[in-house]
Image 1: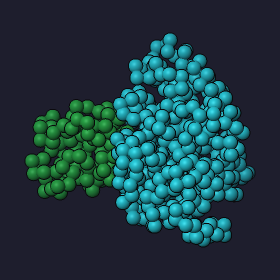
Image 2: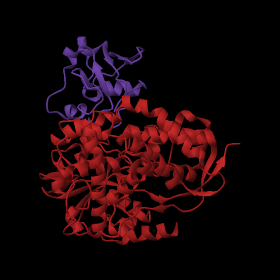
Image 3: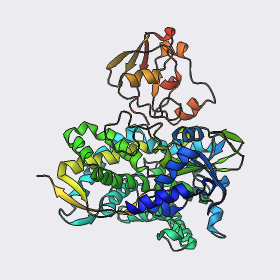
Length: 420
Length: 108
């Protein structure tokens, strides 16, 4: 707490025009929130003239974020303009400055055509079919854990469950499924993150990913269409002739989208319920609160801290003049702590009046396509946890990820207490 | 107040009274009609208030406006049909008293 308090003092002494919320260390040390509190209060649409990512606008209030997110005509996601994260491909230097076109980083009409190809796999019909499989695996994962010993929840549960689900969606070779975890980490990694040592290494591993999937693609394009993501893309007119980089880009999107985010919410749930034992008691007393607890976890965690857009026209937002070409960051994490829209936003309240009201999935045409699968995995793992354990106790500090994009955990030490 | 009838996929119905000038999403959410989440608060930003307007009422509600945000969002909804609408975009008027809309199997 003393570190956090010191940071708060620092935050208020920084001249407003020197406020730079993009430093990944602030997220890793979990001291970013006072920065956003100040911006929301004093300069909610804030221009940072100079940062490691160049100049950018921070949009920090719930309503302003919504306004940007639903105006895809002015605020473009196009990868050629910089895509959906604060980091631009050119920041990675010559040889590694390739852009990865993927449908989240496209505008209509191409975005719409490609999104529609993959959307049914995470639609209500297919999710109902997957329910029993996910539950069986969740049970097996939990049954294999040692009780009463210190274990890493991230590795043994969060990664394991989400990787299994992702492998199923791709119909990916089962024994190799941890490659998906690795590629997911690599895709959003920087050399400072400790995940890769250089941009060259990142590039090499991503191409290894593309080549691995190319083999699967070639098998499936020559076979009868099946209900897995690779087969669906290989057989759809909107995606079957994708250039190589777009093929890799869309894979990266599905791997990261289906992996990192839910993984970190599963870990976040353990942390939130440990910090709020009264809320956990509410859940024990009334298991029907599960769906609302899950939505609250997703808001509380906000596993993606931001999404980026590039203005393609001049636009006035919150009294500020955004110019065509400007980089605009929607800080979802900040919007989810905006007390003008969310009552007591720093409190974790599993029976909130309106728990689905949060920005973690984004809004508009780029809203998270897999949001229901994320909720489903979270719900199932918690239903299965509560059948087996009285408590998942956090026994040490979590290690957080060095990123201003993925808001998550490298490790989370826990000890399991059996149900008596 | 106009009456709105939400028909669930299992055949059961929820009959609710809706305020004039409100919309079908609000009518559903305020009365806890299952299957209508309305996550974005009615801003036409999420497509979780998707309904099917029954054919006899579609003349009164109208269909989706071409090139609108509603159309953009509905194209990603599960099982979108010609009579699909977002509840937040259908205003409750006297003319809609007694309207029957179907709730889809699931909101994407």
